[in-house]
Structure formats: C-alpha cells, structure tokens
Image (cartoon, rainbow, N blue to C red):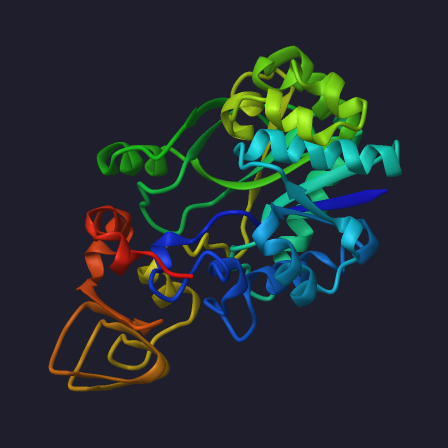
Length: 342
C-alpha cells in the first residue's frame, strides 16, 4: 500500500515574530486560510488514505498537530531529539513497514505551498509507481520558474525508463551565477518530494549511510530512544540520495514553494495591484511592494516601498524585503529578552 510521511519539525524562525516555538510556521495560515500542515494533509489525502499518513515532529508540537490534523495518536511520531531528515524518515519508514511489509512511501514537508494539490498528487503517484516498479529511490525535480540560489538543484543524467533519469549531480544552494548556468542547462529544483519502498530505503541506508545504519538494530528492536541516541544527524539528501547508486529523478511541474521567509508570501498569496501582501489588520496607502501582517492591532503603511512589516506577540519587525531571507542574522544579534517568544 502507499503511505505518506510528513515532516513537521522545525521552529520557523524566519517568520519571527509571528512564529513561536509553540506555534511555528507549520501551524500558521501563511500560504492560505488554513495552517500549512493542514494544507499538506489535504494535498496528499486523496492519494494516500488518512490511516496511512504519518507525521514526524517534536514533543512540543505533537498535541497541537494532532488536534489540527485529526490523525490518530499513533500516527504522530514524536522524535526524542531533532536529528535531521534521514533519521526521521528512516524511523517513519520502519514504522510503516511494521504495519505494512509492502509499504511504499512518499515524503513531504508540512510547510510547503502546493496550489490546489492536484498536479502534486499526480507527481507523487508517478514517483510511487516508479519506486515500486524499478525498485529505486525517486526524487522529483521541479522545472524552475525563476533563477533561485536558495534551492538545491538536480542535474538529470541518462534515461532509465518510464520518464525517470539517473542523477548526474546534486548541487546544494548554488551561488546565483551558478544557479543561472544550471537553470539554462536544464537543471531541476530539488523539491524534497521523495518516494521509495520501505525495503529499498532500509537496504540503501545499510549500504550508504553509516550515520544511521549503526543504529538500525535499536530501531528493529523497537528502542526508539536508543536509536535516536545512536544516530548521527544527517539529511536524507546527503546521507542517502547523494551516495546511493539506486536513485532516479522524475521531472515534475506543479505549483510548489517552500514558503521559506516573509518574502515568499508574495508568491503564494498573490498581491494587490500595487504589489503588496496585506494580512490580518494591515492597511496600506501610497505603498508598493510591501508585505505587512498585523496580528493583534492595525499596522498602517504609508508612502513606503519594498518593506516587510510584521506585528505579533508584542514585537514589531521592519526590514527591507530583500533581506527577508537573512532574518536569522537579525535574530542572532537580538538580546534574548526581545528575541525569545513563548
């Protein structure tokens, strides 16, 4: 049967001050009227039934996510510690395999924007089918819609079958000049939409990923705490996909955004005729190219251009829109009494 794993950890610091540790971006309606995690379940559910959706998160978010998503408690997998994506996805795959030895899984993130989801489901279904029929790990590479240095890129290699190709090279967040060259040469964005059968992923981890393989005995014994103690944090991209010889890429073409920072709202929500995104109690006069969010009180912009202005939790953030991706630098420089939120 087909399963889905949704990664829903992380604190969403690039959406400070609206995002907090107890209500990070996956629980916020950033890309539309519902939280991004709810939108993720809705996007995959017509393809994968609710009783085969697993969500991996931390202890602080397990309760809020279960309440928001309406999944059974045993479908919310609580990490004892954050150890990057490979340990999390291997754990979820092992859980699915215990419940269904023939499981094939598609993995996704809880904070993506996927449009209506129809084209996404078609791509996910195709990747699951290729993973089963060709016994490969499958990544979906997206046709770029712009030059983007903030995303990983995939250079497709030789054809295999069913539209799948070998991966010639992964390039992680290339500088803009290299991103321009890669895009012109037909490279794809590494979306993070992966598919595999449980048996193939676990075999490749044993062969290629010592950071996780040494802890698999603990996982097979059902000792999740010891598994997370013994693993070394590593991403699924670096730890498995960049090392395995059994990897294929499929080209995908569906609305997708990782909603990585405040500037992304102009892409996922659309803008007014002046290019502004105004949410909550935000108002603008003679203003263009701004993103404003008033959470608990009115925020008024007048005669300004290309700013991000956010009011939430007793904080007001103002920065140039072009610096939205660098918000973490600001947070690192702030005193804890200003930066830290409940």
